[in-house]
Length: 420
Image 1 (cartoon, rainbow, N blue to C red):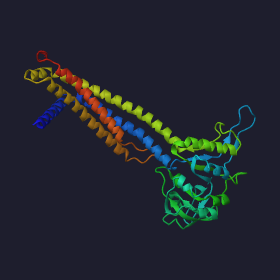
Image 2: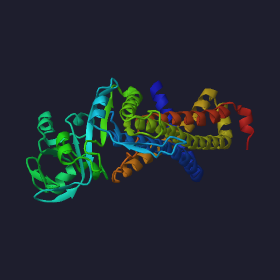
Image 3: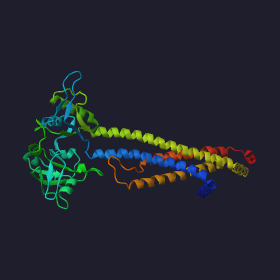
Image 4: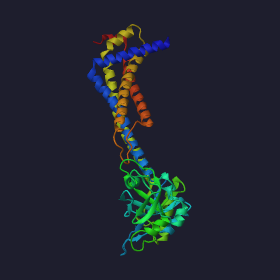
């Protein structure tokens, strides 16, 4: 019986809420719009912030897990001296010393050229050509699609073999198998032993226009250009011994390079390196700040909508004063009056919030039809933002319903019946 009574009261309250809304359509629309706008904007704004975070993390993940690298650099001139800045080039000994550091778990030397011409039986192209050792596969994200990766036998024997990216497969071997085929790199014949899966999405063709050959082969045929650079490498890719020790790893690498090239490791701007772990952490902090700011904007909008509900409920109490007095005169208790108006405010807030959630979900579905954007994940409803919106909506509903309901419940029958 108690369940039936509760359900009947809920049904009556729902009908009264709809009746009051219909009787004051414009006022109800404006009030509900405030709540719906607050909930929808809260979800979308947090979704945009999280989209920025997820997109950046996904973009950095295309480099590889805990990926770090140091490139050739320039030692700035010392203040007060007449010496100009000095260029230095990394070499294989730098790589060996970095690999043997206790803060490094893996490292690979890389010779890089972007000016080589690739020609196959079906097409030709320019692109990124790397020469590195087999462990480069475990550092840089380059999953094999077909065939195999470079082996230590290829490295030791200086084999003319290579692995190519998806964009090279499309350009050099359209409609033909790439693995086992031959290409000419600046006139030198090479055999394709494997292909790399497509990396990234959107405008990331440059990441897929890649070719990797053994380090020893690259050093033999295509060393870095420039006088004195025959034994130089372009950069050293490495991973820290542990993710939370990336700063110690970077510092150790700086000290090794500075020692090998005779300059002070504390010299400002003497190193050109990249730390995807530090970038990810920085992006996380920026995203947290964005979430806090955008979430606060959404909460303020939601609070303004809740104030609108409070206002409309107070007006409803004023308009129904005689009704309240009559109900009390007929035996209605303060508790029942309190429950009635509290439920009306809560339901008005819930209906508005449901509309806001549905609108936000529909907008995110429309965003999903848009083409992908590099470095940005299209927003969608994240569980954390949904929980925050639900909690904020519940708080707004309680506040919006409780204060007017208390005003109604405290009216005495005599005072209420005297009102015109």
